[in-house]
Image (cartoon, rainbow, N blue to C red; front, top):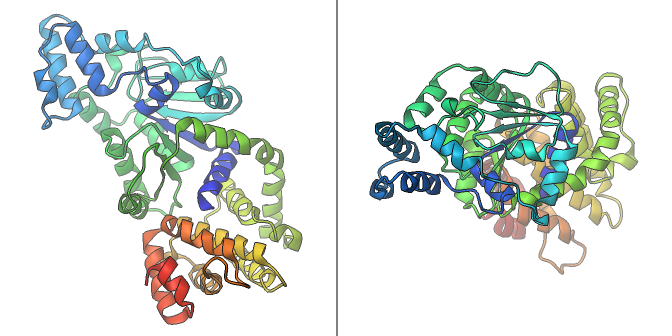
Length: 431
């Protein structure tokens, strides 16, 4: 299924040193076995510790930043600092010793990546052991190299006075051109970004999304932000973030499980990544071609796309367009062999994947993708129907919702005129 290949995509980005994790409070909760307080709990604890009436914290008209501002002003009257108070609570947090975070520990110990966080704690540093740089406002910027770089864009317990806490702090951070705001922008634009430990309604996340939207409106960028949610997200909400911001939402996935899947993929991918990049250069610029044996594998297209992205080549590049057209045409030919059910399944996998990362409306691949989609859908049938690719049908049914909403509309319009399979129209496309 397409979702499974997202983990392959992440692993390839990791192997090419272009993975950025963006972590929020939910990440800290995951690695402390839910000991870490929520923002509400944190403000409540600070208020109670300082004999502040907490009734106003229940006011639904106030944002968390505004509540923090009010707490800050009250503490000032007592000669205290909200930043110091928060820091004293956060410093007490410890990593879980539970096996529940073993995959997170393994990942941080062995991999090289960027991590941008709005968390104040230093638990990510504890996971990374010794080979890391920890950067936060108010602290010197290291000049040496390190396997992992951790950017505390809202400050950390190392420098409480520079933490972004109150509404005033947030306004200043959003509107002030700092090293950390620039780093956030660069990482969003140059890496595959995986968001962990946020809710889609989070103020911080919305600020990130607006930054990304402002950039992507002027440039063509494939969907390079993946949002991981432990809870279920409604399909209209997924559609909204995918169509408006290019953010792919993967729901029903625990943070520990995400790292387990990446750990399981990364070993083999690291072994062959250089070979795959070398091969794509030969194919694009030296006239070499992929063997039929390779093109018959399910992983082929995903490796090709990942290698193209690793080289920083635009998916709209003429040579890339020609290559993908050729690969799809050859896969169609493979489906004509006797009992080619596996090839039909691969074709469905590839088409649902391409339709989830490429906007057909401005792509030179629109015609070939629609033609191949029509061929694939024309073979779909109810399970048990003799002589039909059941796994391909299942793939379309499961992955249809992962396709970019505007692409779904284009496919439906095309299918109304060209698709003769009533089963697929009704049970997959909903027309």
